[in-house]
Length: 285
Ligand code: NAD
Image (tube, rainbow, N blue to C red; front, side, top):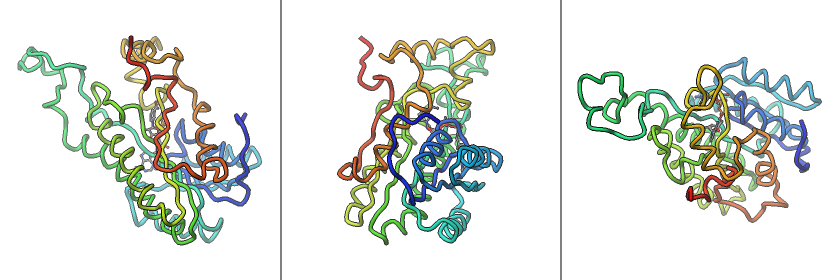
């Protein structure tokens, strides 16, 4: 992969949860290209293996694990194995996350007619399913907290380490239709600040990257029509993104490599860095 710049991560061990996905596979590959031994964690074995294989094919070192970030026992087993094979973990990227259709309303606004029994196909706020809402909150927030506990402890004991959480634009201002995902990412940003303060006396820096809009499998249904054209929501996003385009996964690599570099970002902790083509700065007028 083509890096925006190189940072020396020789001898470092990096864990990337969600590393089988679109954005975090790119991050995992970038860390490996800078010399880190990378542990790829995804829920499905084939997706973490795909990323690990790509890293090894490019001359790097990687190991794939299939583990649910909400399964503390499973995470502890991975941590032990990583320590025995690669050594203690230096970098943790908490990338596993996402939305769920059951936590999503079908319209942006609630209209009086949506409350009539004659519109059963409209999913309003009142129809959101508890299970869907709860699963989104758990995956994004608890799925960041648990790996930070499991992999962060040895960092604190050694007095050095770096955690990078993955937040979102919806953490700053909630996006329409996705109340659970917005609340969950706000919790991730808030937790990033909390953990940065808490870990500040033991040499562990904690920051987050807040990606803007990237066309990935998670949001393809919201942003594209079956024929591939953009939905009105996608066009609204582009109209509110001064850069005038969706992001590419590679757009996140520069912020990541800077944050994990102790020389470049040694005084940077508790921040949430937007990588969004200007979306967060633009009022729309
Ligand atoms: P993706 O769906 O391509 O990848 C998600 C990855 O997380 C997959 O590898 C999946 O296996 C893994 N995962 C899901 N649930 C898991 C669990 N319980 N345990 C372990 N692994 C699990 O998603 P993506 O678009 O690459 O998003 C990566 C991160 O970036 C997510 O946190 C997402 O919320 C965030 N994000 C994405 C966008 C975007 O536009 N795509 C924007 C802002 C933030």
